[in-house]
Length: 100
Length: 480
Image 1 (cartoon, rainbow over the protein chains, first blue to last red):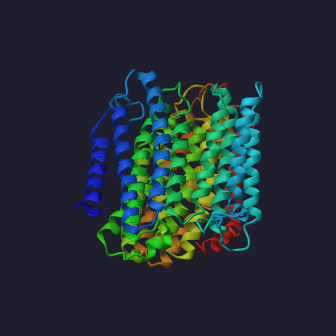
Image 2 (image 1 turned 60 degrees about the vertical axis):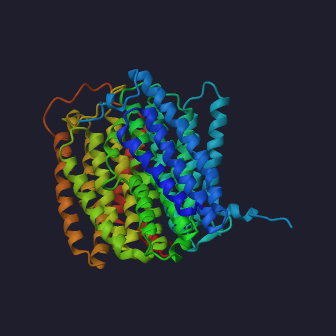
Image 3 (image 1 turned 60 degrees about the horizontal axis):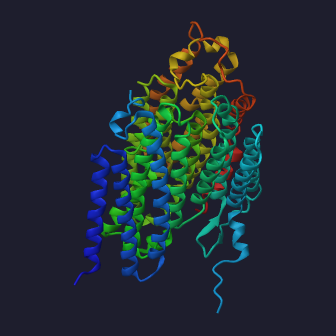
C-alpha cells in the first residue's frame, strides 16, 4: 500500500534531481529542463497535499503552476535563442563579460 | 443555487491594479495602431502610473483593511504605501527610458507593456495574505524582469545578464513554490492565518519556512542570495537597473514583513536569529565588496545589497517603528537611488555600456549640475544629514535600539562608515582635476533631467521634513 509519505519522498527526490541538475549542468537548455523538473515536483506536492488535507486548493494550484511554468519556459527559450545568436553556444561557461 | 464567488464591489479593492492593467491594454493597442508616433507610449505610461499613484494617495486614509474576492485580496495603508513607492518608481523609470531607448534604437512597444505587467504584480504582492497569489505575483514579476533585463538583445552584456538572472531567479522561485507546497501539506492552508494556526514544531514547517525565505530573500537581494545583483545591474539597461533596484524590493519587503509577522509569528525567536545573521552578512558583504568596484553600476548594485541589509535591521526590530522605518527607507530610497542611476545614465555614451568610475573624472567642473547631483546622492546613500538617507537610517537604527539589538546597531554604524569610503571616492573622482571625456555624447534628455531634479528635491525635502511620509508609514504598519 502506497501512502502519501511515499509520494512526498518521491517528489522530494524529484526536487533534488532538478536542484542538482541546475547546479552541475552547464548547458542552458538542460538547466531549463532541470528547473522544469523542480517546478513539477512542487506541483506534485500540491496535488499530494490536496489528497492529504481534503481541500481542493492544491489541485487548483497545479493549474496555476502549469501556466506559470509554460510562461517561464517560453521566456527561457527566448533568452536561449538570443544568447545562441550572440555566441553560437548555450554553454553558460562561455559567457564571462560580466565577471570581474 | 447560483454560487456567486465574487461581487462587483470586490473590484473596489483592486482599483490600482485595474488602472495599470487598463494602461497595459491601452499601450498594446496604441503600439499596434499608431505607426509613426513620437514617444507617445511613454507619455501614456506616465499618465497611467500617475493615476494609480493619485488613487493610492487619495485613498490612503482611513486606516482599514478592505477585503475582497473571498478575503484573498485586500487593500490597506501598507499596500497603498507600497503602491505609491512602486508607481513613483515606475514613473521615474519611464522618464529615464523615454529618450534612452530612442538613442539606443530600441523599439519601445513591449518595453512599456512589460513594465506595466511588473507593476501590476508588485501591487498584487503588496495586497494579499495568500501564498498562491504571492507565487503568481512573484512569478509575473520575475518573468517581466527577465525580459526587461535582456531587452538590449543586440548588446553583449544584456542577454547574458538576462540568462544569469533567469537561472538564479527561476531556481529561487522553484524553492519558493516548494516551500508553499510544504506549508500547504503541513497546515492544509495557503493563507498566512491558516499557517499561523499550525503547530510550528514539525520539521516540515521549518523546511517550508526556509524554502519560502529563499524566495523572498532572493527578491530583496539579501545574503546569501545576493550574488545575482551586481551582474544584473551592470548588464541590464540603466533605467531597468534603476527600476529593479527599488520597486521589486519594496514589494518583497512588505511581503517579508507580513509573512514574518503573521504566518510564522509562532517561531519569532528562531527567525530573528536567522535574520540577525542574514542582516549582518548582507551589510558587510555589500559594503566591503563595493570597495573593490570599478564600475558605477556594479557599485550601485553592491550598495543596494548593503541597503537591503539596513532595511533587514528594521524588519528584525519587529516593532512598529522598525516596520515603518523600512517603509520610509524604501520611500526615500526611490528618490536617492533613481537619482543616482539617472546621473549614471546621463553620463553614458551611446551604445557603450561602460560605466567606469574613471569616466567620471573631472565632470564636476565640466558639468557642474550633474556633478553636484551625483555628489548629493552619494551623500544620501552614505547617510549624511540633511538627506533622506540619514533620516531613514536613523529610524531603522533607533527601532533596533528599542528592540535591544545594540550589537546590530553598532555593526550597522560601522558599515555606514565603511560605505562612506566608496561613496565618497566617487565624489572625489567627480571633482578630481583631469580631462573630462569628450563632451558631445552625453545623453541629452529633458525628462532625464527632471528625474535628477525630482531625485534631489525628494532627497532634500524628505531629509529635512520627514514627518509626512513617516507618519503615513507609522499609520500603515498599524494593520499588516
